[in-house]
Image (cartoon, rainbow, N blue to C red; front, side):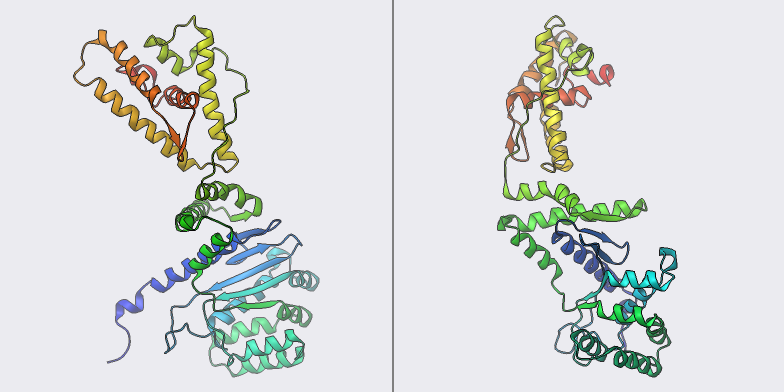
Length: 404
């Protein structure tokens, strides 16, 4: 009996591995992006990079799970479907009339400013005559007529109709376009251990060695989520160097543990500050009186300073929205514990004001931290005022019915 079991024939493992390889190749290129460059995923090609010199790099990413007898990755052969399907895809892109390249001049301009890369974990083989012919042409040891004649002979001799049609699509390009196209093809083979390559990039960026695995996991998660969300909304996935820096900066900062710089609040106060929900809550529990306008203003500044700093840190890539959620969730848990224990078996409304004030005092005494950095007391108090202003927390029993 020969052949594979049915479950092995139908498994999606190879497809999943292929997509993940393509994704991690994109992540690797994203991490190595240079100033002035932009990278995209599944837009112009599997991966594309726009260089600051108005040059486009189109990359087809191919993966195999096939192994040779010695356990190494299978070779990229002369009649490899991945090779000729890639060549066919590029030929179609070059002559794409929907992108304004129906005419010869437009095609010549496009190939002149484009590099075409086939990247794969497949191995290079000296038996791949196409790659040998291509290398000779690009090194100046061969000429266009030789490789063109080779392509025609290869097409006429191949038995697969699919491969034959792919080769024909290349040969059918105008001679001037085909010549430039062949000169601009590159093969990036033996690209294996792609996840380790990503981690090596982080190491080369002087990330704390102890933080590399966690940083990689965070970046991996962020990029995957963004790809999923953008694809779900039919949006493209592109990053400029500046966008990557802004979105990733805080994660790199976390890995190397720098402090967050607190900016003093210098903005104006809102009109009718006594109408703020958190002030109403404080007045109701007799922590402050309406006549104490200076104290009300100070408490409002604490709230606004906390909120403006959080917004600034996120905008500047110094803090992530996930960190803010963790910070606020921790405050909520601390408050919930105080609130529930303080009102346990307390059913006399005459006691509620004193109990509420004691909860507030206990919360003000707590040392609060965000991303491992201890907050000043005014910022800590500001976080309580911010949450009670939305209102996510409250002091008096039954506050939800009154303020939500």
